[in-house]
Length: 450
Ligand code: NDP
Ligand code: 2IT
Image (cartoon, rainbow, N blue to C red; front, side):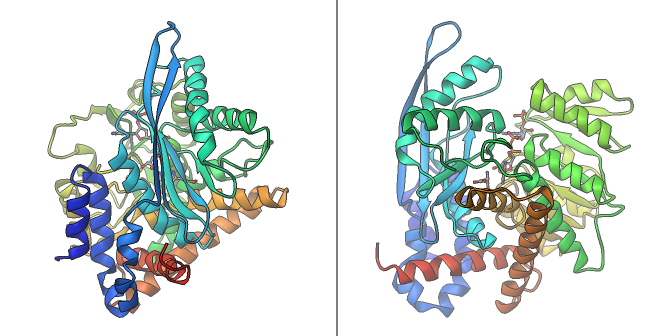
């Protein structure tokens, strides 16, 4: 489908393929909403959403354990603050650049709007690679990163959290650095530790929320996760808690992966094996290959990043949950999933399926949920952490989990209702994009041309 708005995005951001991809996916699906609301077109609401309100890029200089000077790039993309303070994770990965962070910050606008909690969209990070760094180097880097980021964030302004390469450890170091510089204790980060402002269930929330969402999707067909064989990619925060919840609901997970390769465990990644995986990845920071060395009957296969498909997506299963990174399922992978009879693909990662892949899934009637809907449980629980910080009190595990379940159900039902309203029943992508867009668009319209 042709769009003058998309043409302009391509022309203005020629070297930003990830951002263009995320923009294209949204633009094409919200065109019918623009037709129904000519005022949004006249006010150039979508065009404004596609331009960051502010994009900060800075030098991060630090000394490694050998005393050598290291230089990284740090960023914060403050994409949209129409409905609340900027909110979104921080990613530390060598692939981080302006295009990747703009795509993530753009998606975050719609995701945060869908949660029903007042949060704008933002994302940040660095091309710093935490792999192979000592504890001391991680802390030094986080402190150097915060020596600049501190001046741009605040608990009513912009509240970062974790993402790839940033978990509880890094948030602790960054929060500590912020507190020391500002001399104040506020909820400026989410994903904080329990006992110093963190919320119960935040660690689990993205993975749990993903599976709650999938359970809602399956319920519309009178089905459930129980007895389902599932493929999960990644072995980090999102993957670990997706696996945990699938097990809890009576499903079986037969794969997990990292950037080097994947394991196939036909017997299932059961509770004990998942504990091993968590320890391997969170404490020992080892490779997934060790899982295959530890347990009998497990196959390990390396991933060739240059291959035209990923053999992990060519394994027979009922449900697939990509939870590693962007563009991990391309057209060929999607075709393999369809060929093997997949019923549902739920995005845990952000933009893990290419546009070609999404079209193949939808055209073949596969239940497909976009990350901005199905992985919103993480940021939603961040929103609950912010609320608890503002109130100065804490909810129990059960209270937070119940709120998370009802938020995921609301997002699910909203996506379906809006998809129906726009003549695309069952299309969660159209539902999520239009519902998120309308909420932010109305706020931008009310606040004038700024
Ligand atoms: P983690 O850093 O905890 O885990 C990332 C996992 O993905 C690791 O297993 C990692 O392998 C793998 N991975 C990372 N980059 C690549 C790559 N280029 N190719 C193959 N594998 C890769 O991150 P999270 O689990 O937090 O994040 C995973 C995804 O979920 C991301 O897309 C993130 O944006 C998204 N997300 C995260 C949320 C959160 O609350 N944390 C919320 C919503 C979405 P290795 O160990 O080799 O690096
Ligand atoms: O992509 C995401 O939604 C996240 N990484 C979580 C963001 C947050 O602020 O909790």
